[in-house]
Length: 144
Image (cartoon, rainbow, N blue to C red; front, side, top):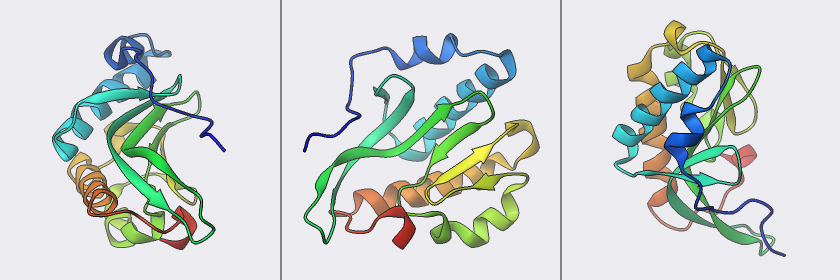
């Protein structure tokens, strides 16, 4: 089965510059630069609304496999979403130092980047990126 979301040729900088409302755009610009530093990779669009950096290959016990961004974010209406495909639990201690946030299984939801410690966020992104790109990754975010 083909992946629902794939890499596109859309311009990630243009996408970020068009984000609204303005506070979400400001946070997207910050995340664009933070993730560049944390990963050393240039941004690419993954689907229509996810900005990805680098790529990792996953293979699950079920036999499902594919490729996805090794670090990514999406500016959503309610919050900016940072994708942590190695699972939120892998970052428990850092999240305690981050500042206001919510979490899902593999997502970090940030309403206002001005309220969080950006150095800690960069550590989280860097750690996740290194974990995912070390080798073929075999866990789902819920197993991380």
